[in-house]
Image (cartoon, rainbow, N blue to C red; front, side, top):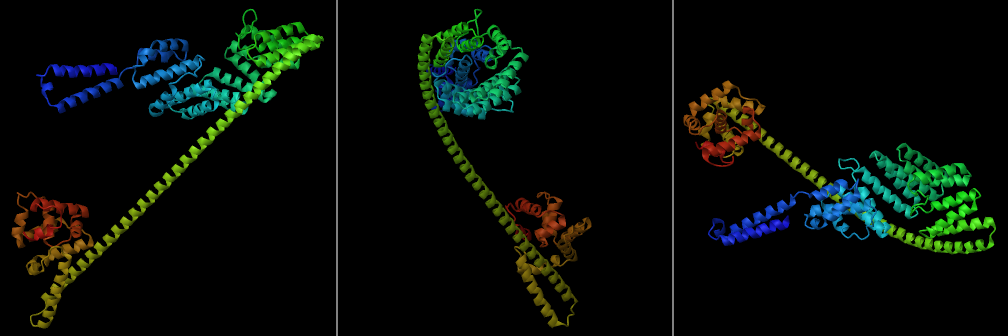
Length: 606
């Protein structure tokens, strides 16, 4: 898809070069760059939105039920997959690894899994990342690197979603099954049992009864490795019953080895014969001629032991020789020679006893050496695993410390923000108290001023001395009032006395001080008063050209009568901020000036 888009871009550029008289090709280089960028983005988007190939979709649908068919399809589209977008190429590679794992093909030659894991670590869903880690673990498993395999399998288990919509409990069950196998090979049966129990639990939740029973069967082998015979037999009997319940006669018969050996050891030969017959005819692990299929040759040793117990040494020797002839390892040879040594010892054939004693000793020595080497390798693997664990713990500790530092920084930021908020709140409250005290002083001074005016009116003309004293007192109070009233002009104070000292104005000041709203009749009286005493001012602010509302007219009048913004708010029943907004709007509307600082002075100049 990308190659097609690239070719289209080259064709578009060539087309513009040929048709130089066309409008788009005669534009400047900037326009051409814009067109090229647009086409490039269009090409990238088309690549990202390209549909998944039918072959890849069909392989995905077949991988669980028919992995061999899925592998054929994947091999067919391999060349095509090299030109997929990154997303579908990663899906193809991951599906190849999954299919190989299901077909039990060795995965130690796979090279692409690190790239796939890096991709899904950045872009994939939980299930994609889980599957990528699982496949990486399988690659290291087939390479024989158990510590790295365990590391990725445990990472896959930790990435898996167990409760969400993408939860794949069957996959999680398989992961824990592989973890159990690795622990079993490392001669850690208790850890293996724990992993297989977890695998069985997830399998049951996912309604995968067969896998759950198989996990139980593997756990029985781990109990056998521990030498716990009672648990081994109980587990084998339970596994046999469960296979029967789900109708898997072949699996039930194939699980009988442990029970057959137990019957032989305890002398229950009739029961052992019956179970042997069921194993041979129903397990699918033996041919019609009674030949055991490759990989299960150790069953010949069980047959040899059975015929030894039945006092049929020739038959026992026959199966021991078959075991030696079909042996796939030192363990089979050692078991076969030991069986023949026992047979000829019971017969009293000295030459054969000497012969098989030497062969048994050689096989035993070779097996012991092999086991010693395996123990050294296992010890090294355990050391490596411990080292990986130590490194992981150190990283975890470093992450924990980082989280602790980040938590401390976050707490400090929260505490600092809270302290700053409380400080600002305290300063604001202090400023509000100071402003309230100032307003109280203003109101008290204004009351004293009004009282002084009343006292002066009551004085008779003959009391010149008292008149002079009151005049001085009034002048001082005027001076004090001018300090509280912004932009007040003391020299023009006498011109304002007719307005300020009016009974209506005094009553409104009293209402404002007590936090009372003015009534409709009081507003009507106030408007009548200003129309009578300051007609020019009244006609100016009520001019239709200004278009002031009734509330805005009242604000202008109250400002003209030296009312504070807080008093205006009380009388009109408005909040302080609303009054401030009204004053700013009026200053802009009437005087074309922003803000409220010059509003009082502008009103007084009208």
